[in-house]
Length: 122
Image (cartoon, rainbow, N blue to C red; front, side):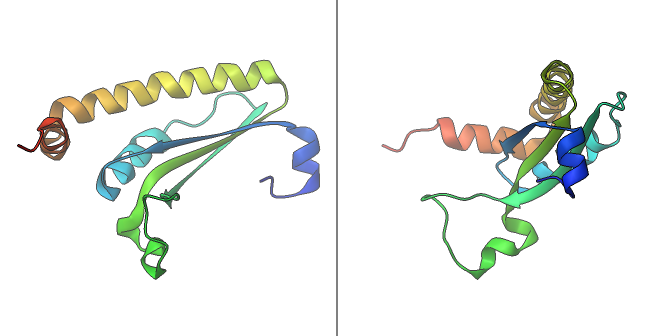
């Protein structure tokens, strides 16, 4: 949500992109890799946050505010036009694809998680 009414008027187009990760460590690594690149356009504002998963598959207890439960990278975009929003989000998706590709290739935990989810119990 915009910080104030002027920002909502100046940047009327918005989108929230939520990307779930298997662990908070991977979500944090993705955040650190993505947030170093600032938006190039003055017509777009972007903010990032790590949040806990919500939904029926998660426990609704007090532990949802711990760092370990924050496994979703949430990126909020605000832009002056829908075109600027689209262009910025497309760039973000390309960057995210690179980050996820590197994680898949180099992170041992991702490979273990993938192997565990593809095995079927007998």
